[in-house]
Length: 406
Image 1 (cartoon, rainbow, N blue to C red):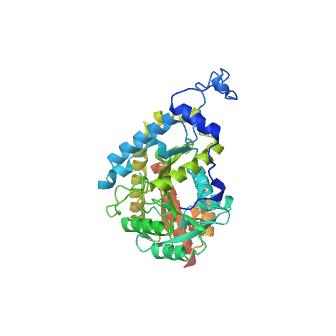
Image 2 (cartoon, rainbow, N blue to C red):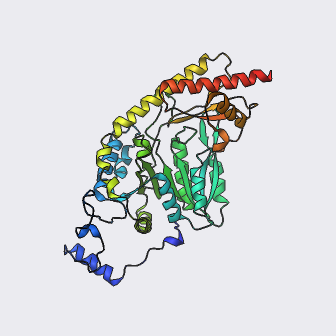
Image 3 (tube, rainbow, N blue to C red):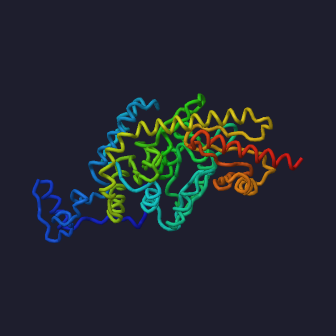
């Protein structure tokens, strides 16, 4: 596995080696240069506890997170079978940080030098491309195709990796399920991606923040499986409170590191250095993680009930609309779906009309690199009356614009 030249781990100096030996022997050393005010009675009384600079984040918080993740894995219906032992989440494999956005930034630093590239899905959320650009790295798109359901163009990925004779491509990013297509990876796609990444020495960054939100009424959903904990390829799985708790203001995200032992050891050395430079998560936030994990199941259930109910409402409203000009693309999980309307209506003109006539704004398909005109992203999160109003406004505006063309 190839790593960025800017994260070369330094060999420990003689003092660091001697300190490590003393620590292993159970001997506590006083520090002549200890400038941590919380160790000397100078921290504010309103913020209890002493600061302990663990680059991965406070151990207690990571242990609580691993307990939750292991419990979730045990009751999962994903059919891991004999792979289950490899899926055990060790607190040492977790890195706590403020968001998955920060995780992308750290991982691009870890894997890429300036001018390197990562592969990202298209359609997809534009955040990753923006972060890659800030890191002086190119985001190369691989296509998702729609033919009644979404599939990844594996042949296109293989062609991009094969033609990458200079080894610029350092990571393949998968969003599972994708946003805005609301599609999970199929088992055969997952296995093909793993095989390609092994063959070309490319790491996987798996964004699985929406994974828990499969739509309950989708009987034809593919068999789902996480990348988190994957042992055969260096894998960085991303998740966080923003989606798990429906709490974007609770800035907690995490990276779960897995893969072949040698790659994991090297990645850990380098990622520890990055995490140490940026300093660990605030203990003010981390101290609340165990408490907040206690409401994870109820919060996820609340969101699942809302999005499933609104999706059923959407389908009923589209079915009852006499004009039948709007439909929803096949969706399997997440918080958002894509509406399709006649492509003779310009996306910008429709959104501006919704703003003018209904006081409603929207994100058109081209925001997500849809290859053709005629799409709007629709959130399934609003309270039911507001959701029905939103859908009704879209139907009315589309119908009226088509009528005006007749």
